[in-house]
Image 1 (tube, rainbow, N blue to C red):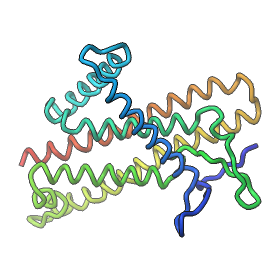
Image 2 (cartoon, one colour):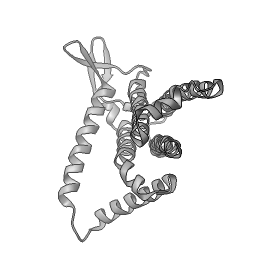
Image 3 (tube, rainbow, N blue to C red):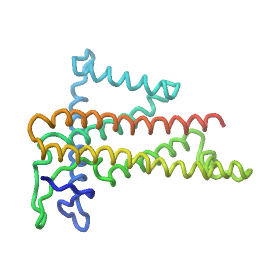
Image 4 (cartoon, helix red, strand yellow):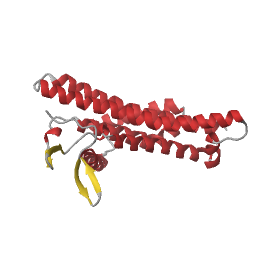
Length: 244
């Protein structure tokens, strides 16, 4: 049975920097998405084919969803690249992490065998980094809505004790978002990987298929949730600023 490790395993070092199997797959996902983006860009036609039509339908649906959240098509189009990138990157990472045969590629690392690939979201460093990026970017976008000082005043308001206390709660809320986003994604993906490892060990033929499809669905839902929570956070920040 494959060893279950909560911590991502190190594959090799570049100087003093250790490259783990989750980081290595993150790099692979980045290369795949850049290559696909380049190919799709080269294949764009005025008269769309079946694949381009499917992509355009998906983009339009996503934009409509964002427009309903923001109440503005202009804002939906402005923030679409960020939200779509988060969704696609996490989704592809989740899919490749549980792709059949991925865990079969192993290397010797000392006395132990280490899988070359591990789902990036099964590493808390990955999910924490994405959560920090999400919270920081939403606050930057909030600053861009009306300016730096009005945004900071939302967190540090000394005009009266009540507003000061509310500001403290807002600061705590931002840190709570980081914890919530990172642990929700990490917990679901890591638990799914553990489940698949156990099922494949106990019953390696046919029986794991329903669980594999279940984890694909979970990976899709978790990517969608992360993107939507970031979207809602942007909407709340910009809406609050626009009222001032």
